[in-house]
Amino acid sequence: MSRHHRLWALPFALSLLLGLVAIATAQSAAADTEICAQYGSTTIAGGRYVVANNRWGTSETQCISVNDRGFRVTRADGQSSTSGAPKSYPSVYAGCHYGNCSSSDVIGPNGVQVSDPRFATIQTSVSMTYPSSGTYDAAYDIWFHKSRPSATTQQNDGAELMIWLNRAGPIQPIGSRVATVNLAGSTWDVWFGNTGWNVVSYVRTSATGSLSFAVKAFFDDMVARGYGSTSWYLTSVQAGFEPWIGGTGLAVTDFSVTAGSQPTQQPTSQPTQQPTQQPTTNPSGTCSATYRLTGSWAGGFQADVTVKAGSRALNGWVVRGTLPSGVSLSNVWNGRSTTSGTSLVVANEAYNGSLGAGASTSFGFVGTGSAPSSLALSCG
Image 1 (spheres, rainbow, N blue to C red):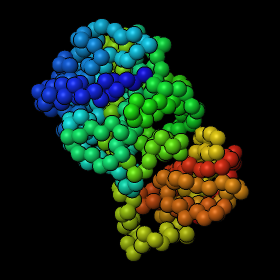
Image 2: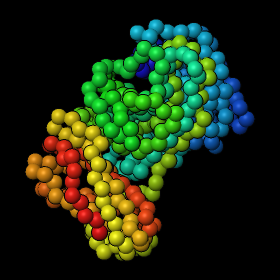
Image 3: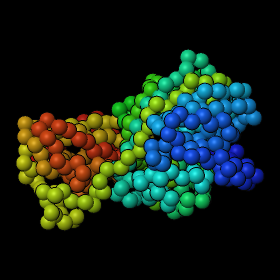
Image 4: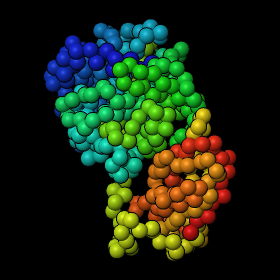
């Protein structure tokens, strides 16, 4: 039930926050740094990430100990009603949030537009540890703005994507549960609510202490449900905790946000290839393609395809198949689609076309129509 942003949207709260951020932003953390200030923050990993205490829902003390890989909650006084908002959201993030920016080369002060090919390459991972008691959620909080932001603005007008790795106690996200899907190799309950902007929460049906995923995988599911748009801008990727009761011992032990090569770059082995041309249909090895349905809903579905090299290395691949009547593709990631009608054709991107013998990669897509449980594919 992530409601801290609803309170931050109030003018007096935002003015107070921006003033406190200007005072409380600390020096880059080298050795462990303890932060107890309400909105105190510091940078880690050479400035690539910001760690923020963000105690917004209680006047009681909260302290975090920050190291160069993450942070640990060392004091968490007070408690909030589990039928209301949490006490805080201590977190580590890349990007900009309420004018407090990291030096990330992945998410700059103007964000990354979802339609930019670079967005498809953004990956994040986190490792967390949890105490044996308390009421809390452990979650990503990923922000999208409808228009191009600046480092000094926080436009709560797009969507807040939350990804819950774990929860303890009688708490739930904002809104109501609308679906169950398979994404990033796991099963998630999907919740939707609106607090002036869309809040879409993916709650893992079994708890985990670590997660690695492409931001696009979850956002594409949001778009397919009508909760987001490819014209929007990613502004920050945050990972942390929302405690209601207790919280001491919650820790992020590792965190990263990275981006791969721009898909518009061409492999060095194909310097003359033009973006409008198909990648080679005669790669230097053989491959197989395996379809897997990962989620479905009324009128749509999501699936992925694993491409695996055979006994020889590949330098480019193309997957072909025939879609059932009434099925079409609306989004494809980690692959370039020239699908037309029922003919499915997806070729490698520049960054995932070269595979060693026995190595594999994958691409995913969102489809409209009735989800096929299986799909015959060829790879070459």
